[in-house]
Length: 318
Ligand SMILES: [Fe+2]
Image (tube, rainbow, N blue to C red):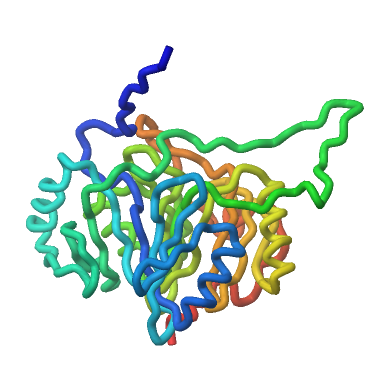
């Protein structure tokens, strides 16, 4: 007998207006071939589409990001996904808040709502399927039984292939303003923050502890893209593969406190990072996350190597 697959609606918090996903991001780099190599080795499914590269993850149909060619590495925009019956309410909200609607950037065909955020970054809210997870993503820790070998042989260690985008961290000139804008306009909620230095925001319809985060700088920019993997072994295998391919700078292995994820960051060829992330905290649509202002020295990371001196340098600032 064939099982009939029922339609399972995305998780949703009733009665509140907020985006549900970070549907797509765009940034530009000076050489697409360099980007193709880096992100392919990182384990992403990178495809050429016209004059841009698309960033996918294997076994997932979504396109998480787009990379275009430009004179230097530069963050472009974030496009957020909303439920169809919310989009008119977003348009009304923008009007009520006197936020000017803009045309999409040249070459982008999307009829969403385009506007600038507090920092002048281009933002879109559009109707899209929910690509943020509806439940906490599986994390595997396999404990070996007595009399059994726990570790894989190196030759049996598979290539790490991230499952999905977890979050994007952007530089901003003003973290409190970012918190204000993204909560009031896009309907995100602040999970945790550290003074005026960093803030982590989640979607109200169920998302990771942060789908977007902001760190203080003197200019906007992209700090890192974070990609979900299923185990600490996958983080280690990914980091070792990147090292073998010459991408020897980064930070990890460690564990964050805000978000709780295990991490290893690989520095990309332009001074920003891609993060292997595992077991990040999840905020269901039914949960009011109990977070707040957390002291940086206690909350940045629980354990890990010393932070590289240029880890939070914004190479887009000059
Ligand atoms: Fe991260």
